[in-house]
Length: 433
Image 1 (tube, rainbow, N blue to C red):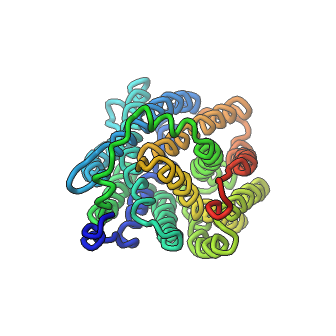
Image 2: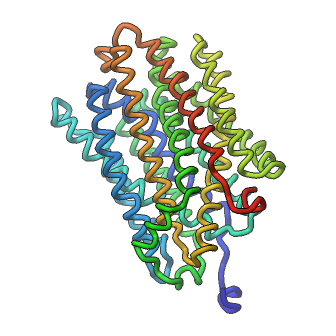
Image 3: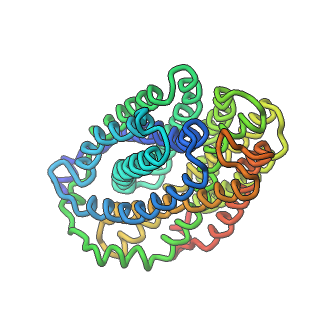
């Protein structure tokens, strides 16, 4: 950065930027926890059909993630590379999200409902991609100093946990009282309000706006040949699949294993994510003491062990106690993963002298979306093993099916994630911390 640019550049304050994570998370977690349940248990689309649609949606994500990441990297405007995409996405995301949870009565039958679900779930996911890739791509650029980066990320991830609480815990309470459509409208409008604050707070670095435009072929080659990109992505692939499975399993677990109403899911999700907020501070200290890599691996194995007790609990109180330990594990992975991402991106920028945050974060998101295949496989296994189809045909042992979804399958996925994390290696010891 030139001396003049250094003097005139206005740094972005971590707090309003961190609110963007709250804005993304609130609507996103309602989708993660209740979209499958809504279309399967409430509206009656068979679980196997939802699993098939998930496969097609994942293939579409494979195309649009790197596409929008690359376009973001190439964007050059007076207000920045990422901000235009963030502002354009907001109204479109609101409209698509509301339609996703508000299918007209005329389509709530047969294959019309299946088509409606497929179209709006894929459209909403595309807009989620645009909003998240551009938001996350700003993080390595805005906060360069490692200590400030760690604390800015902790604030961001704390807001993510607040968003998880609002999006998952408040949702069943509002759904029971107002229904899915009104609840979804509330969630997306609140979420995009915070996201808009973040978008306006961002001050992109002038030298990055004026930097050389990366070429698609070179960018794809850099990502495809980056070993750490693949090992970090695969580690997070299995973690994200486990987390997604935990979230969507909660309403099934509450209904079929504990025999309680859907609204009681708020207590279990609250135990998980309210505990995770103070635990975030603990994990920041672990990062300071041992470095991000050690803290990251520790959090992965902690979460893998923490899901096991949920297989044996049979009351809401014992479920909440088990859920609190799950929350501590989630906080650990959440506090670390973006720091690991940033290390991969910083290493690439140092080697190439190009800023390719968009293509890298879209690549990470691409792998995360592919974790939907693992979730899809688990849903299919639940049908094949336990005969669970939908709310009208839950099979002979829906309680056991929910236990496997909540405990056994996530534990297996987290074990794989932990093992792969040991293949992540940076060139020098100092950078690995």
